[in-house]
Image (tube, rainbow, N blue to C red; front, top):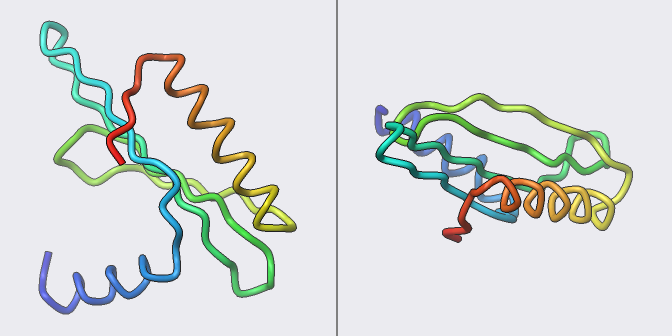
Length: 93
């Protein structure tokens, strides 16, 4: 990642609240997955739960879900975190 691109990425991340970073590692199956969840304000006054997932060490896929309030977005994020933990993901942050 270039320095300019990294600075833009870090600036964008500064308005986001990281809710959880989870990993699922099973070396016998060559599985190294991650799942990250953030809560961020949108330009329209709503809140977005941003999810990123993929293989550790590679760029992940992103998906946003929009919510009316920060509280509802946090509740949805916590529900998703519990579901991922039930499937074997471990919380790292």
